[in-house]
Amino acid sequence: MKTSRRNFLRSGIYAGMGSAVLSSCSTAGADITGKTPPGYKALDEALSRPVLKRELFPDPVVIESCELLEYNGNYICRVRSTDGAEGHCVSHNHRMPHLFPIQVMRVNPFFEGKDARDLDMLVDEGIMMYQNNYKYQGYALWIPLATAEMAILDMLGRIAGKSMGELIGDIHHTDIAIYRANNNRGKSAEESIERIKKLQEETGAKAVKFKIGGRRSLPEEPPGRTERLIPMVRKAFSDDITLYADCNGSYDTAEEAIRVGKILEANRIDMYEQPVPTDYYEAWKIGRAAC
Image 1 (cartoon, rainbow, N blue to C red):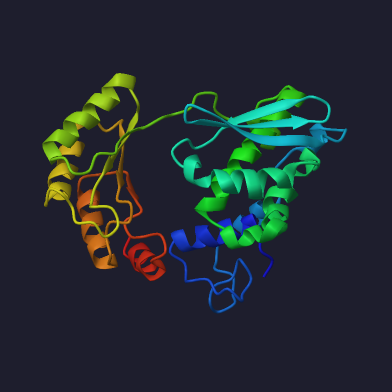
Image 2: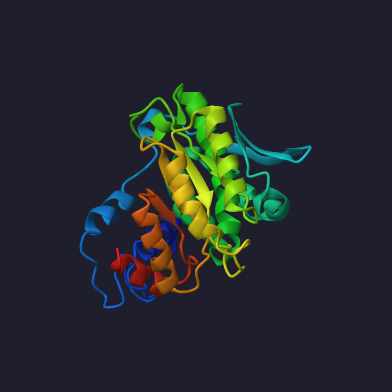
């Protein structure tokens, strides 16, 4: 199978939607039987289309340098072309202290000397084979790669006089909806709901996300918090506020995830995020079938 970011993402999408576990020896769009699951043809076609509007750039845009800058714990990727154009991207400041060696040793050097107009190929396949980066697939590679990719898009947008969105598609919405999240487990349901309400009122956000469960295999603290918090969140907000429940893979079994899901459903919670760990494929499949 051809290894690429596109294939990796496609596999992740299939698993997350509850399809059968993919076989590493089959095609990216096939399940364990070798057949493409119904409904995925359109997804495969979309993933195969070019992303960057290369026609906006008649002349080569050769990347002269790709650097990671740091100041007081803030990380910025700066890309420069041989013609003097620049692009920047703020990186993930919480993660980059651990990932910067990959950024500066395995990602940034790859882009230097390349034509930025080839960005589709560079991020989809080229970066994977550079220094065997395919072995780092996942979080450790995608954050540094996305940082460089966004800096390159910023540079191309400045050259073309267009937003990054216009480089890859059409702009449908000029306003960006936001949500406020409560990241504090370990507090009582009463403390949590007060914090969630305060965060939403500060911005008038039309969506809120609250944490339930204990995060992966950690026990919930205090016990019973989830069952108390869910109905409190529903009562605290009107129906025009979208409500997200985030588990961070708290439930080890599909049965427990389904039990909590039914509580969320009964309280009209709009989204149930990552009830089981990401790599618990069979649990995802069972949970999806129960919806």
